[in-house]
Amino acid sequence: MSSPLLEVRDLRVHFPSGQRGETVKAVDRVNFTVGTGETFGVIGESGSGKSTLGRAAVCLLRPTGGTILHSGQDPYALKHADLRRHRRNYQIVFQDPNAALNPRMSIGQSVREPLDILGEGTKAEREERALAALDRVGLAASYADRYPHELSGGQKQRVNIARVLTLRPKLIVCDEVVAALDVSIRSDILNLFADLQREYGLTYVFITHDLGVVSHISDRIAVMYLGVFVEMGPAEQIVDAPLHPYTEALLS
Ligand code: ADP
Ligand code: MG
Image (cartoon, rainbow, N blue to C red; front, side, top):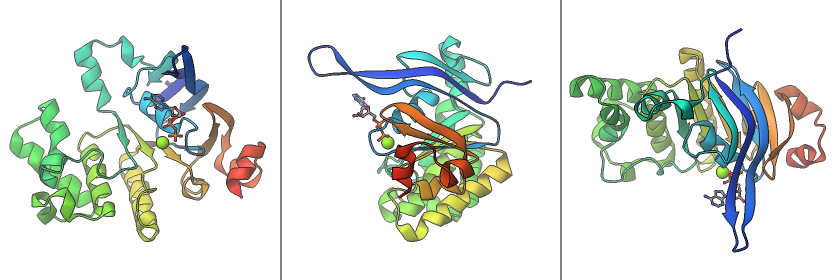
């Protein structure tokens, strides 16, 4: 049997807090696996450790303990240059549409930037891939010459998705990707994620505080509370027959 795309074992991310050597256990002994093509939902209220978990899953944050395996490989066992190449496969899209966009870069430059950093292909090829990615997320080529402040939140989030798509990742952590957007356009963005998943066989870790968002797109859902998973199972089971009182509280 082949290794799951993402395997998280006994993961701990602790932050120092206060002066007396106390720690915040943002993530504490979390275990799960995500298979290729699957959508794994993580739901919990603010401060439960979701973003910390998501960042650790894509090596933006080094765990205090435990293991992250990407297709069976420990990314931290890779040499520096190999880790750089490896990370393109494991990407993240943030809640704040502005988080990854430089206000002084045109949209075209921003979408091309990750490829520029990797130095992949010629500049013309990178430009072509950026335009193709913009087109794929529903933005015409004319957007390439615009700047972030000229776009709506939803359009900027499309740009962020295009930026990640150019790398042809295997897994994307979607961290509250519609939470900052107008309610009226949330389903458009969620549908775009669903279409891209079908088209490219993408795997998602879908983080949200809103069960309504994850319930119909997730295969499995984990419920996070104060750094631990209090419940995990098939989406229907979590929604229809929650076992944990905290899950019931989130549902109501
Ligand atoms: P969520 O995304 O579910 O809102 P976070 O992962 O952002 O939760 O935060 C989980 C806990 O870890 C919170 O108590 C938060 O204050 C703490 N935390 C997160 N990042 C840091 C950090 N860099 N330094 C110290 N504490 C942090
Ligand atoms: Mg968060």
